[in-house]
Image (cartoon, rainbow over all chains, first blue to last red):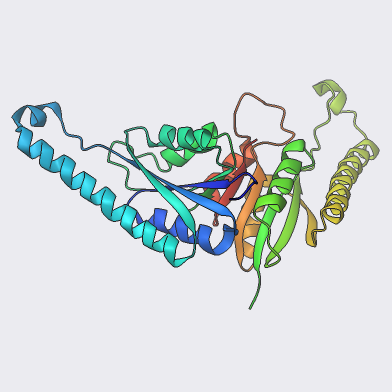
Length: 153
Length: 151
């Protein structure tokens, strides 16, 4: 159909409100006709301490995994609706990883995105208490410009 | 209704040029009002060894200050021309002060500032970091979203 190179925008989303704000900001201020969205959901696999894991039965673990997958499906549905409502074309890629920064950078590189959009605070687990560590990583390792949506309180 | 303002920080370096060009190519729309800001610090430390500085005349001091101010004006002029070439109607300002804090101050003060655009680094001497000190500062203190233009 189109002969010119597709312009891909990677938007990093998790289940957080800030990711949604970043998405909305993109829609209202940045989006241009012709941009194709690629939403990257870098989800953390369920984690627990080793002692807990030893006590866990397979079925409970399976349940946890299932509920994580459910959350991902809900998120995808939510953002698919938002894209549709704004007349945008896009895909969603969900990848389980405990290195979300790397995932975002790698996907953007593979897909030859020309821009990454993301927030600074997501749903990070307690051990990643350094604010904005994922956005920091992405800004330092990205191959293309990054729009960082800052939280304002 | 006041238009949405976009603040683009420039320092005359190739990184700033890249940021401006990238903004024009991918982000700009007629609905955006663009404010180009060149923040510069006047440095009154002269590159002489400490014994000689005691002998600096007021004249020399004035000269070095004026030189730097002229350099800043030249940068502002450069972007005025670049904007004309890009057919971009923008307000271009030179502001004296520490770049990081000044940019944050301007973004807060300007009504409807929606985004700060800048390069990853500028003319800075220390090149061991990926992100220059100004970009780093703005990224962590900005009241609005920041577009860091990585090349």
